[in-house]
Length: 553
Image: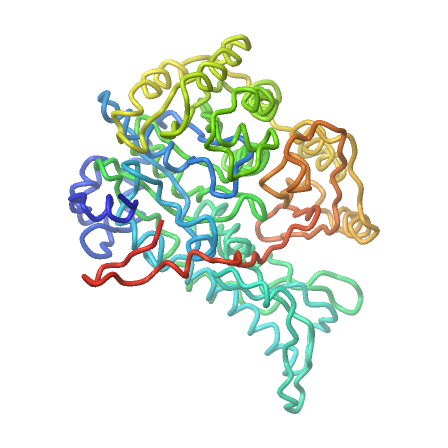
């Protein structure tokens, strides 16, 4: 049965009943139909003095192209905790239309571990991504309008891009202003996917609406003729952008198929952005739940590193435990087994793929000082011999493991890991960051590359080095770094799965994100506007004969 059919055949509780489970009354909700709502400021203000719950981060090893089920695992653990009588709340990212219509599919979990209403969440949901897209493109139109009407700020180089929430490689570089109107200035422009927009990052890192507007005003839109930065506030654009985002900024409340409350808000990608849901959503969840299960995108080298080094730094958070998700197919894939053969039994390939999992565990335990448990997202084609091989390897290293079957069994398939999680979050930790605020930009980049990725060296383009110097002269060297890198490898080469030989990280471009307050370093061939695969998922989406939507997964 397809995920969409499982979701459709499950009777959901009204959102007011879900809100009651976290102590929120109907008057503190803004309902979007029967099964979706936004949590108001009043809902938070009534609980802001409560003690925070325990925060559990779900991450993973380097994934195969279809992912390893982090969201499915996060949902399963939350449902499992509810099964054993614990007050669990989910805090997840919103899906992007790019993957929904591309190769990876939706981001609402799978099987019997889903958040719902699945179709709504994967498509337009409550309109948050549309609001972010509109705010981004409002700024673009105000920039070009300013130039058209005389360019009082003497903008010479515009760095701000437009965005759209779709995979469309044709828009990576475009020529604009070609209408030949008087005063029209043609220029080269481009589009990012909405998940990579700085406004998405700002939306997810802002602590309140005032902080949101402040950050929007600090967006660097380009450079003037003197080489000085020009900000959005110099166009007086931040107020209108903030107003466009005012409703979207309230976190969304939905539910799992088993009725566990889920706060779903914000959706930056982890390979080209910082990969975590909003601080607002996490802040709300920590007050509403005893155990808060959140996730960070792609492998731990991306989402978890950025969650810990960026989000935790900004929001003064620290997780009480980390779940590192692995699948036997990903271990085989990272050992070099072709993706079409990963469902075949291959114990030797499990052994060859183990270094990838162990590197991520080492990073989480030794570099970040956190307690870690490995969750094996079990598939029907996994064999007892392969599972035993993995279990033995982890036991030798003293690493706890749980075999999770939440995809096929829901919360019941995650009871074992839920019980282990209750014990794990009580153990002492020694949380620390990869780098210090006082480190210079190159030191920060090299600490991440060497400590987290395992790189031997870092190489910079001439332009990247010049930009780093400029950023430091401007006084922004204290910002954290956000490295845009492939999710498929610890290196910046998506084909280098094993990383057995020494490798170098190549930094081609560095971008100051003045509103998000971090510095993006683009490595390898990473693009901030993805393209569709040869056969996109969109080809299989449509209406069935009975009028219901089909093909979303």
